[in-house]
Length: 114
Length: 111
Image (cartoon, rainbow over all chains, first blue to last red; front, side):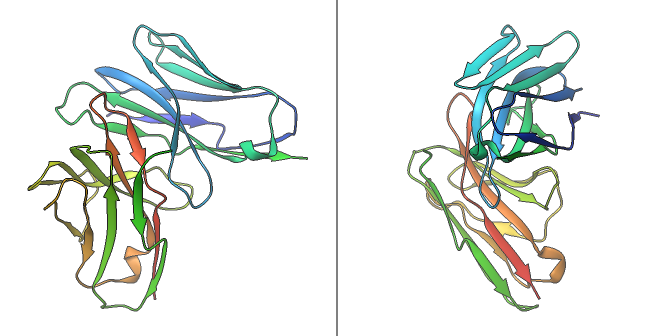
């Protein structure tokens, strides 16, 4: 069964600190992995996308890593800001269907305190 | 910023009413999607469309229906709303590389 598991479920950090969110998946065959940021009451917004051959991708203070062998990804946030408070969702696409089916994790709820 | 819009943003309605959630995009994307998301839970695909006059049911069974008469428009309809339909509904479209762009969502409450 294709699954995407994220940890931790929730995380509280102080402003200016770094944090790392984890994503493990069993989706196969693998096409790509995306990290989305979803603010409360809003739709998800794409942060990074990585294909099989990529193991690191940065977008400002966000750095995603991918280990396709162990089927693990992480999202590292540097120098956190209050506006980083959101749910971070890991999404894996399979390439075994015409649709390119997306599998969503439940997200990590990050809260940044001043 | 994605050009995909959903209306209404919030809707509170009584049981048995018919409702239509609107979704439109101005990016010319062929593929569009509807997801249902409960608080703290993952998004579940309920409908998708490859293009005009193409609609398919997603992974999660839903009593809603969709139509795709125009490329830019993908409305979702509930003929008779029930409290179990209370949820957030997210519309998305994807470009040729498969990157999905999400609308802001409609938060539906059925009393």
